[in-house]
Image (cartoon, rainbow, N blue to C red; front, side):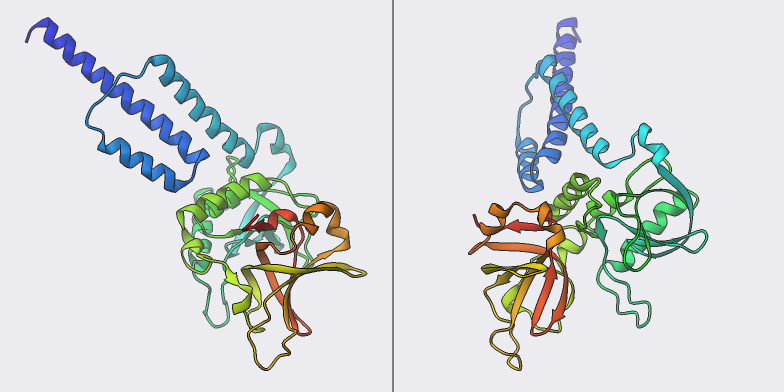
Length: 325
């Protein structure tokens, strides 16, 4: 083989390598900044291309730096920084109760902040889908780190059941809630005043929803229409409906959905209703709340029966999304 042919072959290989690395970097960037659906379309186009082209090294470097910088932002918003390690408590896990609750050495129960995983029925074994998978995944993470984790408290350290409220991390500083949400093994919840890592949890749940992973492939694949609910359907729900009335009482602001509950034994005035306690109103903008009238919204939270209504308490605007503007 002549030197000119060898040189041409090397150039072709270099061009191919540069192309592949640039595409990998670009796809990583798309994974973070765009939906998984768009990423799949882009990947399909790349695989269908018949020819390679040379990407200038300057452009290749820009893509790589952009990808690394974007990934770093995601890591920084989720994981512990070196300066925040002093705010954590290193503990030994005695038992994993479910995907969002553990018992630590000494017997104290710890409930994770920012996530709600499917419920495990410890008495009859009728657990919700992905409940056991969430628990087993959490157990595997903890076991990998010899049963030790780092706990970081937020503004409020205890819930009404007396459980300690904490963000949980591996001993290397990786956010475990973020991992569970990313895998679709739980749902992001917002309970003020504990709002640290809110963007991290929101972004990881968003990816799981777009990919229809875990709970987003089954019970939360679609929100429940408020006109399909009955009084029996309490507990954690993801619902959707149109707000047709806004009222204010002494303790709560009420957002009523237009559709009555589908239960012939109940009065036709039965409603599915959102309520915001007066102490939480400062998280909301009054103009934004008034603008919800006649809007279709989606909300996640716990439904409870109150008189002839199903009521969901809304604690923070991040728990609500407007479907139509």
